[in-house]
Length: 282
Image 1 (cartoon, rainbow, N blue to C red):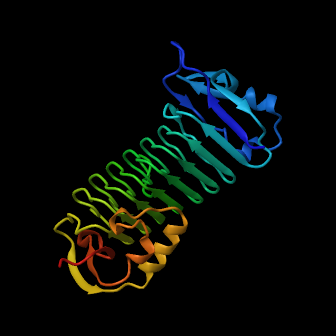
Image 2: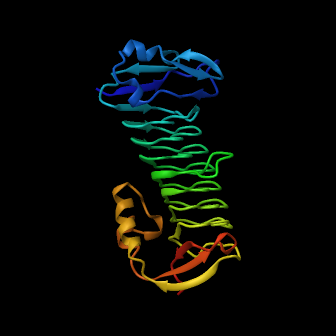
Image 3: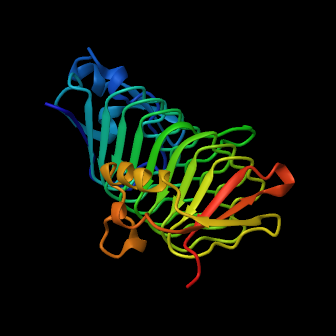
């Protein structure tokens, strides 16, 4: 049976922050349930056994960890995961799936800032909202996400997809300012309202606005109106990954991405090889 983790009942001395480094399916293989219960996690900066903070049941042999309850104070969940599956029936804190290179993380609730930062592979799906810097580069890094797919069916904050180098980020709601900032490659899709200055410093890659023309910097040049063949294919891939296109109305993105799209080229200050797509005005 899968390993299950449930927060213990809240008390007056419950920690405000728990760092979950090392609690991963690929690292728990072969450990007994007693050994797993003794694993240390940082609670407000102090090491404590996992069993002090969570009810631990099952085992980790099948590569699946179920997290039941509110994990919004738990940070770095699935960070560095290489294989296996983690499912959260609730919300998670900051830096979930940071540096993940394989496996699957699904979150039924919301996620904090820096979701899937520096992701290298695998898949992440969040049914609710996420904070700032979703699928972005970590501070001081020239490049961010280098592979994998991130689906967020709610809204996100600012700088989503900043400095992405590869991979796909799909946002079912709106996004804050600076989405796809200094995008190096990869694809960012936003179904809802797009914040100001998306694509600033973009070098290559694609930004797809499903609902309306985004507020682009003045250093973008209008291109042609055409029907890119890759967009319906991408829509089908995202539908299989659980993406809900709120701009489609019926929640079926595979039927809404064909037809004509307006293309823009930019950022001209950084070579102008990036591309932005949106539906042409009626």
